[in-house]
Image (cartoon, rainbow, N blue to C red; front, side):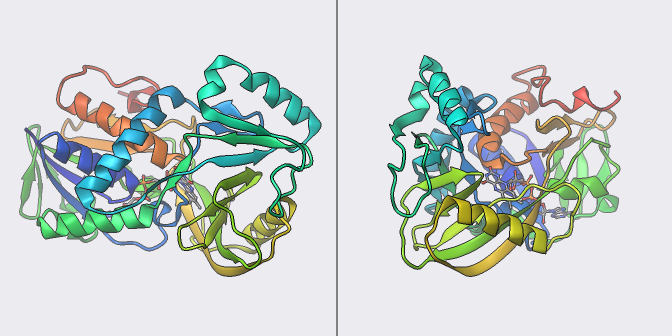
Length: 349
Ligand SMILES: Cc1cc2nc3c(=O)[nH]c(=O)nc-3n(C[C@H](O)[C@H](O)[C@H](O)COP(=O)(O)OP(=O)(O)OC[C@H]3O[C@@H](n4cnc5c(N)ncnc54)[C@H](O)[C@@H]3O)c2cc1C
């Protein structure tokens, strides 16, 4: 059993803390309660088939069965509901895409993700689908604000959660221990999301990406499934919907923009003719990386300092599996992290 201090309670820090606690370790966690963090504004979607070509996402066959077990277990542990498996309708954009995708999905390796093929104009409910589309399964979303609030409340009650800024200058490390305020732990793990870029501790090649989302209510329509073509419509149980998301690298301001509004409303009007009313707008910065793979590992010169970050646009599907991979590494059960996610791939050792 080891003693950990986790800095940052976004999805990365929360899932890692939960994983370590469940494995019998002692964990303390601190977060500065910033508003509009990536995890607080994210839609929380998980979707094994992505992109224009509808290809299987990286490690889908490993990550998706894992997350479908992981989040329901976490719901039971936290006593809260936040895991919503939902089908996803993906209308085709063109005849060319229809042909391409239909020939791909006849392949056996896609069969478990495809529920059915929808014919031209077959979905109804104000959706433009002149080329038909496919309904995917094993998709859904995690209501991250509910998950984060539940974890914070349980861990506050257990006395292992602190709401405060943790400054690197307050940390004292030896080769055996890390000290911060009254804590003395075996490892400190930084899970600071894109704020890691303000630190010179790890020098990792992040590529932060801003995202924006609309919160809307449809006034003459109801959707029970996620609809996704160029932008997605995500139904919540209270009959409100999230519409998103934009993906821009150059503007890292934390507020919604005119460009984001034009992009999302333009894409939405091409997806559905249903009428909607705006309830709110959100913006956040994704901790994306130069090669779209997470940054996980222990500092090359400081053996008690770790990082679990770089979850990019896929925090919900990457965090559960890679938290376990990292935990096994920290416990010495594996000697090497997979090179695709290990920080050694991009920092000088
Ligand atoms: C608009 C938008 C839509 C998205 N949609 C999806 C989606 O549908 N599906 C999906 O999987 N992903 C989505 N993402 C990406 C997802 O949000 C990220 O992958 C994920 O939230 C990253 O989590 P994190 O914990 O690494 O970072 P963060 O969420 O940024 O968490 C870091 C935490 O650390 C805290 N912190 C930082 N520095 C300190 C400090 N010094 N002391 C104390 N606390 C500190 C911060 O306040 C924050 O709470 C979306 C992102 C955006 C912006």
